[in-house]
Length: 83
Length: 223
Image (cartoon, rainbow over the protein chains, first blue to last red):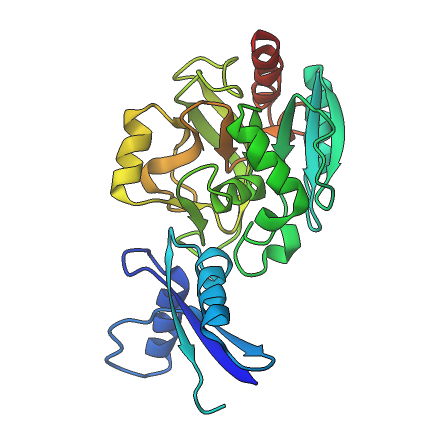
């Protein structure tokens, strides 16, 4: 079995009001010096069998098409080698 | 004149959209998300709501519904399509319209009567309005903040493709107060506020929304 992790984050120029709300909460909890918080999503995808180059490319394509909206988000796909 | 209204799992305003079509003088036709069939309608409304629970991103999963593959083809061929609220989000996710709708800048779900200024009357859905006309229709969304990069925003403005702007305060942080846009051809329109809730004084604040639904009847006749 193989495990692929896709992290999706809003592009830096897109306002992240949720991240800003979390930053505000951190301040209220007395945690000083938090310059910025950005909130994203992580997808953990488990694949039966071996992760061939073809399947990896397929996952990369679907990450850019379904898991993230390239208009407002960037993604990073990594293979979890610990698996 | 047969106007299709698509129902996705989680659509809320399909019945009101169908009712608006009927009041405007058209014949509403129910379309089902799981059927790759537009039933030969003359135009389509993608209604508001929370398709697929807004999971992943608003409109992201609806985009891949069987009916959408047909709709994208038909829209590319000139079929008039109006996406309201969640329908606007689906149109952006489908790349029929540019940009994206993101979380309101103040994070609150907002529900109120909203003043808009119609900025373009050349689209299939706005021809019955005058440019500069102000209307009041309900607005209700949590993710209505329209964003696009500056280049796309300049292009939308330069080509007259902003069809409506918020007046009297921007309710969600949308860039340049944009409430609705159209594609270059003018057959596809996305609008965040809800004209289908303003077609009858018994249930709406005004009847200002009716123009979207009467416009398309005229457009289809003239096409």
